Image 1 (spheres, rainbow, N blue to C red):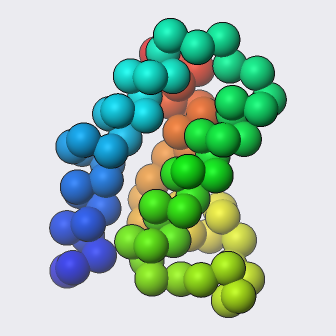
Image 2: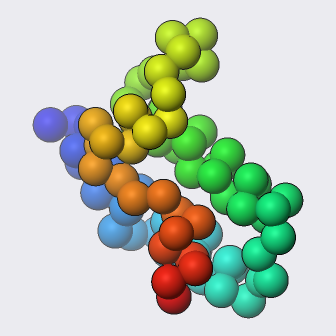
Length: 77
């Protein structure tokens, strides 16, 4: 329950919207895509309470939380 409330805060409120709003005005190069993905994964790992030492793949974390890749979202807006 707690994880899903944190995911709602991330996905539907301030954090993701700020990232997407800022990225709309950029020309996305590989460097910016990597920065967005890194920031997103840091937040998703904190929400899921998983460390890098546990060696879970990013796609597995996204699937468990039901989060879409932020770079794909930016490219579709």
